[in-house]
Length: 267
Image (cartoon, rainbow, N blue to C red; front, side):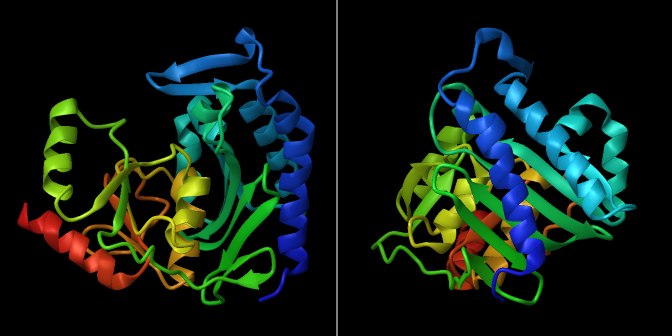
């Protein structure tokens, strides 16, 4: 699947939004351009500008298809009801905490879902001008080249996991459980970067606590289409309308995924 007209249009929208709103403000945000929605959950003027632009553009592109944006949901939880039908899902600035601190990585994520399942996804890295994209059943691609997921080939598989949304006691317990079997590394607080790492040989595993659709809809499908595996602990597929469920695991190949979930079950 080469870059289709739709892929190119989505890429150009994301690129324009990044060049207009995101990159000019990177490492230049004023204090009054950052707010806190909750603990460890910042939002910036860039999140809101990019989401407003992409929402308007996607409505014009496909009239009648609902749009579910992260910031729209923050303002009105009823927007989540649209996830059960055909909808676009937008993360206008994935990695907001990094961006607000003047650090990479960060990106833009768009997914198209229908009846709870992701059918297509696009992940854009503005600093690399890199587009990861996929459509169900058609493979995973980066900038026109098909991607086949590969492992890190380390003696111990590289496990990236976040301790942000668990207690210190739980974090210590997991560290003790996994350290003998895996090389542990911190997740980059950016799904737009973490999913590519799982396919490109940098990480072998990721354990995600929160499973919000704007973070995972595109990446989970892209990783699976690349030949990796992203699923719930019971092996079921990630669904965008099951955003309240905790726990999602991604791996560079199914064997590494199976081994990890077996270790979890034995704990």
